Image (cartoon, rainbow, N blue to C red; front, side):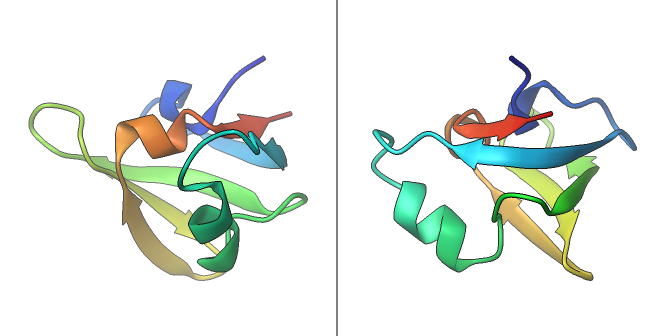
Length: 73
């Protein structure tokens, strides 16, 4: 299964779930990464961490290990 960390620049995906065992899973849900939302990878930092995503009309940057717990369709 693909994760948000696997997206390439400009690629989109639909969130199908968040891995509940990750320590930041609750925060990720609270900032708008909820199932059914379309996300797009907007930018990567120099060493691919953090990653900036467009979600719900805003740009949110999260760490790559946090993006790895966002499961995509």
